[in-house]
Each structure stands twice: as structure tokens, then as C-alpha cells.
Image (cartoon, rainbow, N blue to C red; front, side):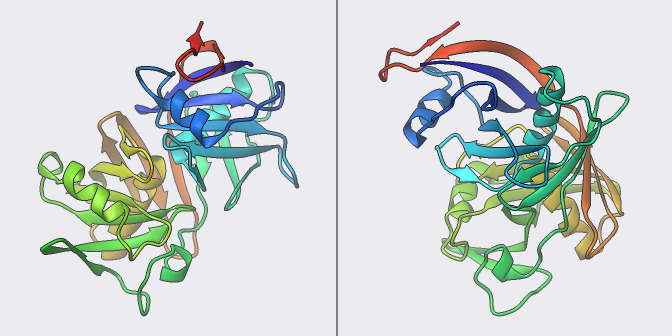
Length: 284
């Protein structure tokens, strides 16, 4: 089976986007893992499927990590989704309604080409993350091997654990990130965020993503970091988030309010891959 795809990125967080409206698509977790391989496949952090809406929306949006697992939300992917459906003539609306596993999102293509996404209201109750805790708290101690880290826990449609570090370059992302991701306190695993505060309107961020490892950028991770900083009283309502792949602008006005994310989405190339037996895949 030959499958058309588009390679995209949002501030370095890279995706393969597949139109499942105009072509028949059936992808097993094994095939997704093979496509994600950066040497033997196409290579990506996440795979995005564009599908017909099932309810009162314009499209349905599905997200698969490089390990083949389906996840609930992806902020950088949402912006690439909007760029894709516009560039491929699937819609001419500036603002669209998109179904995800966790509900409807409403991204908007701005006049300057950037995309703003209403990422929804953060979920702060531990049971909704999900996270094992007796009650909601501002921060929680999490035991990692022989030491404890202080984390803020919340869901942006997917689970996040955010900690403040003095220097992002020295943060133990590679060593500690996998242990936080798979910590038994998070029954569905978690994205581990490391935030350095530059000032009240600017942070630097690295994220070890669930099922993908450290990525160049993480949109929901940027939202979660800003929410955690505002809750702790160390950030203002509008924050520039600098990651290794670029910058996002995040705005949150407080509890029971949605988080707004603005940033770019870029098409890298388009192609066709022949899904044959393992080891015989070809990219055009």
C-alpha cells in the first residue's frame, strides 16, 4: 500500500501528517514504530491523522507517539494540523473545530501565518491527570531513586509533571526524565517538564515526552509549564516559552480559564511511502 504523507514541524517538534479523508489508512502500532525510525523510516516525534469528524466539528484529530501508542493531545501538532488542512484545501475557515480524544479544540490561523490554539482548561485535580495523590496540592514530592523532586502536576489533555530548575542546560532530562515518565504514581505515564525561569514573562523549557523521549519542543508542555508557574506565583499571565526548537507564546488568565498558545507551523516536505514488508519500505 502506498501512503501519501507530509513532514512538518512546530518549533522543532516534528510530525508526519496523513490525510485519512482522501485515502484509506490502516496503521498498526508496529507500522507506526517503523515509520518513526529516523534511519529506516521517515522519522518523527508524533504521527497525526486527519479524519472526518464524528460529531459537531470540522475534523477529527488523532495523535500517535513514535512508540506506536495513541495519546490525547499535542499542542505543536494542533498547529501543524491547521496548516495542513489549509494548505491541502480541506478547509478555508480561519477558525476550525477539531475533535480530539479529550474534547474539542478550536485553533485559528492568524493573518501573519502563525496559529493560535485554545488548548482548553487545565485539569488540576490529581484524579483527572491521572496522578496518585490523597488530595490536590500546589506541588508534590516525587521520590526518584535516592532523591525527591518537587513537581506541579496537571493535565493539558495529557499528563504533565513540571519542576523548576536553576539551569536548563544542566537539568537531568535524559537520566531522570524516563524515571518520571514511568513512575508508578502516574498510571498512564507522564510528560516530564524542566522549567528555568528567566523572568516573570519568559521561561526556558525542556520536556521528556511520554512515548517519544526528549523533543525539540512540546506545545502542551509549554502550556503546562506556564500554568504551573502562574499557580506558584512566579510567572505573569502572558509568557514567552523558549525551547530548543524555537519559541511559543502562552497566555492563561487563571483557574477555570482556557490556555491560549500561539506559534508557527512549517511544512518540510511531502512524499509517498510504500508500506511493504518490514525492511523493504521505500520513500519517494
